[in-house]
Length: 378
Ligand SMILES: [Zn+2]
Image 1: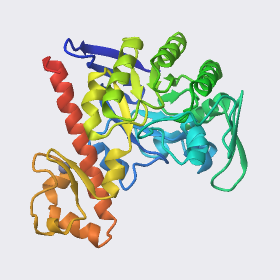
Image 2 (image 1 turned 90 degrees about the horizontal axis):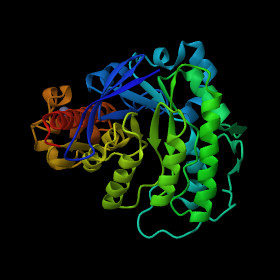
Image 3 (image 1 turned 180 degrees about the horizontal axis):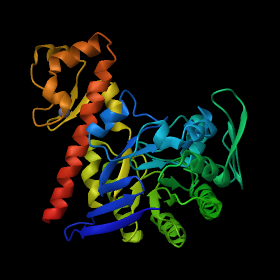
């Protein structure tokens, strides 16, 4: 089980400083959750991840179910031992894949829609490649084409075998172009699945419920009312938060007000560097984002002076570290010139170096924000 304590509530914003205690140690919040989709932060060893001061990781239930399968993970002493991460750990529910394999693939879009949205998904619509039923989702394995079924019962059973400290309830992440009729239908299903996820839990792992509702305040409010009435240990915020930064900040503010202050809140799958201040100000405690490692592998370093594209030849003449203000091992030991050379030479160490720095950059930034909350300036 987990225990969450708010150490300080800001008077200037919804931001709060907290401690999330888990059986594998304490997490200082607000903080980033590193995304270890298949049981690894891409391009890094677990010890490196520790050295970036990442406190908490989230693994993907859907991917680990497909490969290697939860039975293999359980046979090797569950996820913490399997991946050599003796620290706090989350697993998501696999619900997001309902969307990304279904309507997301049909409509060729992510969960956030840029520009104007239209009602392209209507009540009772079904995606082409999977079937959503009352009990869960039937789909074909992208690995071998086998027919698979994932619902609240199955998701919790898998997550219990994986053994993370915090699990998530099974939910549907509806597409951003869904009309309100579809959203209502989807939301009611997500709420039934939330109760079924709780009923399916037999372990002492913590379980977070997920609030959906798209970009509509009344649906978010309704979802928060239903989900927070259930005895979850914390709450996740899923789905679309509007196509632009201002809308996202406003919607996160709603969530900060709608969720009970005593329980931890996790924002699912969001967090570019420019979003972080808004996420913290809205009173979120944790958020997971692939940005630091995804951009890192593609040669983009996040620095105190903005983004640097390390594939640019001009850096070959630059002897400075990625970020002169960063105290990480990569900035201490390596030059921009060397890292740019490695990217251009297609040496895979380049991906590790920038991923390491980017994670360190996020964690330094969040440590500063925590200090600001403590000092009463944020
Ligand atoms: Zn650095």
